[in-house]
Amino acid sequence: MLTKSKLYVVATPIGNKDDITLRALKVLQEVDFVICEEYKPGSRILHAYDIKKPLKLLNEHNEKEQSKILLDRMLMNGESAALISDAGTPLFADPGNTLVWQCQQNGIPVVPIPGASSLMAALMGCGLAADNFLYYGFLPANTEKRLEALKKVPTHLNVIFLEAPYRLKQMLRDFRKVLGDNRQAIITYKLTQPEEKFFWGNLKELEIQTTDLPKGEFVFVLKKLESSQKRR
Image (tube, rainbow, N blue to C red; front, top):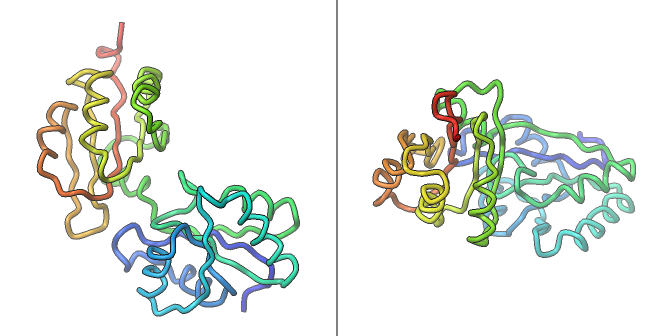
């Protein structure tokens, strides 16, 4: 049995439900409750493995207040909890860091349960050297701020971006506007799922290749500039 008063940070599949680890299943089956971003994705994950546990919401709208409530519950009741994201490895552009920090500061052990990651899957499949890269995450939602941020993206590293599935076309337009048509990139689409695809090319080519692509989760990898291509 699991030791009480622990927070387990549990990676779940990014698409293919067979990518859950045996350790993750054991933890999810034995904790007292599961912390998720939204009820629908959280319930779907547990239902896929016939796990019945109470769900508690922790998201960008309630993180400050809910972290305190969940911390007090673990401290006072001696309960253990599993923190999951909607998919993949938690805390990469997901809420939950506040709770993890508070647990660490209050003597509640935090135990990472590694597993599927869209970032690692993208790097594994796109053939780029992964010894030195930058994980950028999400660009600002505001168009003006996003364009300004793109101007500051380093050119000497491969850079990994995340974005909402419905913003791919807008993202490509913004990248072309700031970086030009010829900058090379890779789009990894619906990783681990039957529709999985890798799109290679320059930004203009990628926009053409993905024109009729159905909405789906993706990871965007911007290739570094070779020395002969660097901006002057």
